[in-house]
Image 1 (tube, rainbow, N blue to C red):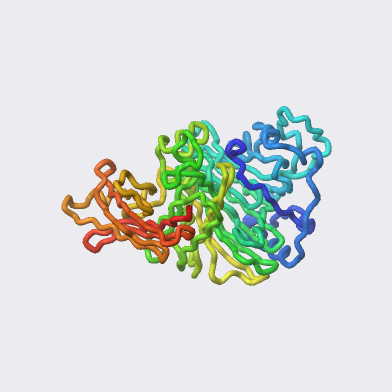
Image 2 (spheres, helix red, strand yellow; image 1 turned 120 degrees about the vertical axis):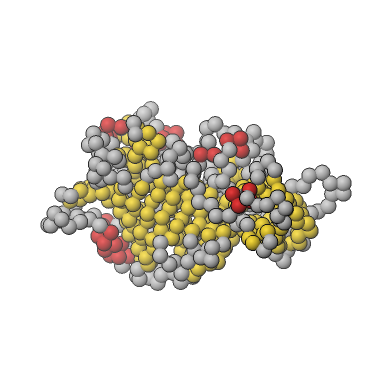
Amino acid sequence: MLLDGMIGRHGRTGVLAALLFAPCWCSAAPAAPVFGFDDVDRRAKAIAAAPFTKSGALPKELQNLQYDQYRDIRYKPDRFLWRGAQLPFEIAFFHQGWHFEQPVRIHEVTAEGVRELRFDPDQFDYGANQVDTRPLKGIGYAGFRVHYPVNSQKYKDEVLVFLGASYFRALGKGQRYGLSARGVAVDTAAASGEEFPRFVEFWVQRPARDSQELTIYGLLDSRRMTGAYRFVLKPGVSTALDVKARLYLREPVGKLGLAPLTSMFYFGENQPAARQDYRPEVHDSDGLSIQTASGEWIWRPLANPRRLVVSSFATSNPRGFGLMQRDRDFRRYEDLEARYERRPSAWVEPRGNWGAGRVELVQIPSPDETNDNIVAYWVPDSPPKPKEPYDLEYRVSWQLDDETKPPGAWVTQTRRGRGYVKKPDDSIGLTIDFEGSNLKKLAPDARLEGVATAGDNGEILESEAYRNEVTGGVRLVLRVRRVDANKPVELRAFLRSSGDTLSETWAYALLPG
């Protein structure tokens, strides 16, 4: 499913126009920054004013590489950037091939100036592949990965990868690669087809010996848009990436998805496997979490639908949203190779006011676990106009041990199905478990209430909330009837006691079938 846990499941890419090939820039004043966001912004603005162009094809020596052949090409450890310089960070590079057909230019920024890091086949071990490397001189890299010691000071762990289109993913302490983030999403789930902008050029700022963060600049390009990016990587228990972006449209787009996250959901407790599988659950994320400006928390359990499903949650100036992996018990997965319980959650925290818009969730049918079939992003009500700059800032945190949760109670699981009944009917049973310190502090005689509502296509027949003596939380049991079995039902529920809201809002889509 993954290439050593580093490669995303998508490999569609764009190209850098030849007009961008400019000489290295050096600063005349040593005290002034040699290179920064404004430099990337000027390039993004300039290429947005010019027609989009594509580069040449991948050399024939690399065109037919299969997955196993590509993963056998490895960057040599002794060639890592900054290896031996006693710096906290090191960088390795990815070879072109397989799905990664377009070159990415990469530069190092130092106090002396900017230099391009040029591709050399001697930097790679080609394993069992019989590749004539002579025609590959100077073809360019496919991407890069950053190493930093988050688990032990004795070893620099892989903590960040940029590879494929505008995809990037990061790791914190004790985590395994799972979901990805993207620079931007264009026309996702649109009938016209999705466009995949890609990062065509990067500038990596050489860190100081005592630095705990790394600054990376990126230039994004595609047929209809360009963008300038600054990423500040802060590895740790939860690894954070502070993102500053300025986008330019060449022409209007149907839907602009900002701060997008991409994940996988195959099956879980609310949707058992379609065929026999020894694993109880298989997913990188199990729900979408949203915190609105008003302070409401919303939890949408994920599903692997029979047909494409797009859900929207309208709000203004959201405080955050993320695709989360709340199931952290190995026994929920029983997969010793994939270790889904160690896959990180990703939380997006906006900087400044994002205005009115919506968090959109796209769920795509998938026949197996090799596809990223879940996408979430922010869609502004007022998208940018062509040639006008659009600014955006946010933080993405890859979390495991200190995941973002509501201050009250949160949903730990959603189970579908009813137990033994004497007279079966067409109703559907849903069991939702909540946990939180506030639930454990409730007085023994406190009155619990599960407030549940259904959309026009559903009816709540029964609703009962009672204490879960095993977890110390509360279990809410619903019995629901659908009016039209071929249409979805939107359900919402939360816990209340003496007029006080105790939990986040469980927002569930009961899909057809």
